[in-house]
Image 1 (cartoon, rainbow, N blue to C red):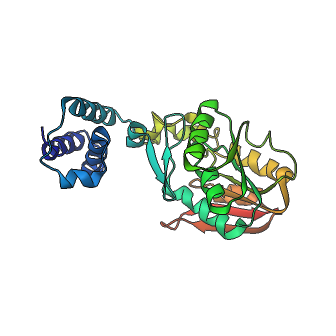
Image 2 (tube, rainbow, N blue to C red):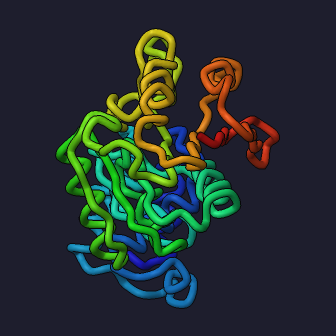
Image 3 (cartoon, rainbow, N blue to C red):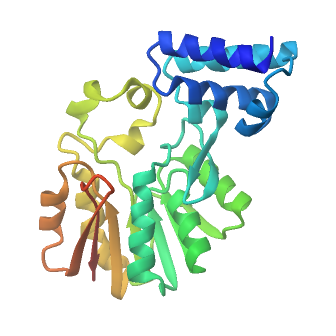
Length: 273
């Protein structure tokens, strides 16, 4: 079995199984099985796979056909130009969340101390620490997710103080210049309509926020004024349809700003204490 044949067969299997971007997925999974970058596959199409490599590739294809996201198979996801380790204990970082980073760098680059609420993989906390040099804190209610975040911070050389805590409960009063979060914002009633890769594999704690989808927004916005220093910023990722509700929560805050994503959908809301 050559690299070229393995890619053709893998692509066909994934296409027949209804998996999107089948060719790219086959390339990523084969590269992972061979411990090489994708470009190697094109440079060496005639290379013969060893039996163990073919067995691993076949297992990865089977897992993807069952709906397991590619990122949970390879344990990798890029975020803001850096590679993060991911497991089913954490939400897979999305490109849309990079808008939170961009808003923070625009509005609060001089923050001396920041906290990422519900950090998951640690993508926001580690990225902002590395981009700003601020003292970074991160809270996470899931101990398993906190382990993943700590691993990413350590691997990337980002000193992040991880606290297993429910939202901002463990953060002292008036200690933060910046609070960021990509909170859970999917209403429970929408579970059935989610893609199976999300519904069946990503952690419920990171997805769902009660019947309304607003419960975590309500709690973060209510507690953020306690932990923010005067003039500090609160920056939140917005879920679909959440802008009106979160805007009302921030009535009375200063300098409320909304940033759209590349599709023009309101994606980030920021407000000053």
